[in-house]
Image 1 (tube, one colour):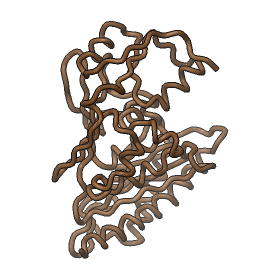
Image 2 (cartoon, one colour):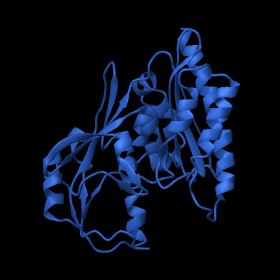
Image 3 (cartoon, helix red, strand yellow):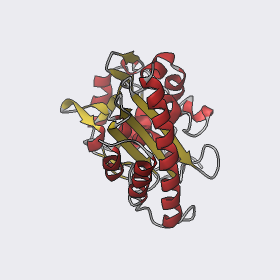
Image 4 (cartoon, one colour):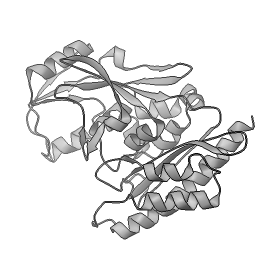
Length: 292
């Protein structure tokens, strides 16, 4: 397969990239290209111009404050996965990214690119939702910040306006008493997951769950928060009965239709099992962190 003909530009600043996009409404931004290039080769995407942002130095950094990790749009997934500072600040990122495709893909792919692509089965959007993260975007109208809960609208569809690009991803630093976990099931290592569950739980000194954030990928038309499952956990003891109730609520959130990979019923079974296992790991980690 070969892509259609297109023009190619390499801006050296965000301003230049935004201006190039504004000048051609059929152009697209190119970051790591691990999602875009296959769509070009299959002629699913037919842009008139690629705006390669890989030379923009301002998009290549990772900054970690006491409260937040800021990851530039050109930071590769593998770089995040191997960054010891990121792991200390929020180990959920490494755990999630380790499940993304294969190392060769993560060497080129970017976190911001995966989030902007918004594949309903991808791990990164679910991680952003569970973390309560956000993205910084820039477009012809200037810059703004979009919270994760407001970003994903449908499969491959976000709330980004025409001409806007993600310039950074922001992830909160994990609280000391918060445990994390991510588990997914795929037919082969590196395939898109048939279902994946991401969980963050915070416990107080008595073991009561003061906060729970759960999200899923692969089970609906977009990555989504499992709000009803969260409600089964928050404010009570994180015991087996609460986990079972949360798993049932998560299972009921599955809306993906039967397809060649799995039936709706099978995905619901997966979500039930994965939610139980993910919450068990997150609880143990929260207890361990609280005891330090």
